[in-house]
Image 1: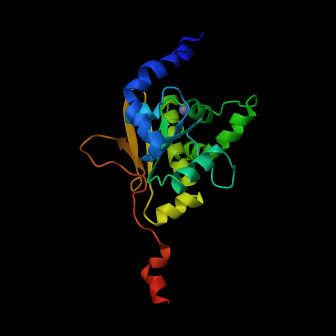
Image 2: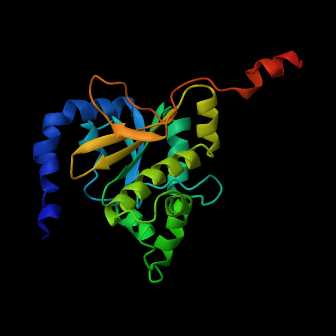
Image 3: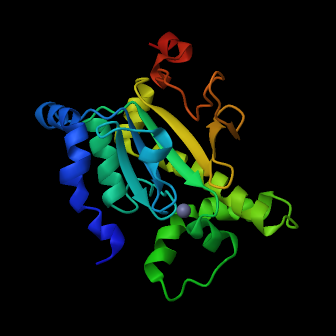
Length: 232
Ligand SMILES: [Zn+2]
């Protein structure tokens, strides 16, 4: 048997006994995760590991390229997961997390031939805005590593904008109940970078420094603007 698969036997005998109180509490009272994280399926990017999260802490949705299809373009797992996290679990923070050396981003950055993988090609169309932006807005003579990094960072920005097309998210943001975060994990350096929505730039997350936030909690109701009130 695959050595990894064999490890499952120790869950009941070794892992669970140490955490049975937590699991029993979660089983009795249900879950109330503190955040939704949408990250890549890459085996090296483990959200619970990066966040040092316990069972019950984090609602996670993983897919190739940490992509969030815009609402209505493709009803599927990501859309349903986002809706459930917001509507039922009342998640207040949503993190889109990209990473270095991402295979999906590499395919986009290098214009790889994906003709034998039509589903991957179709999925990555949700990142074409980032791909075009990288191609046309950055210097053409960047080396491959910089191109790949830029692609992954811009992809996070694009997926955050897609997230805002989801009605449950848009509504929660307007009421100030949801904040959006764009992160990038540098596997080589062991660092996590966060997007500052004001500047559009990423910086390393450090303890003791303000957390860069893509879109902070804050009421945003256009109808409450002074102009609208004066017109009543
Ligand atoms: Zn990846």
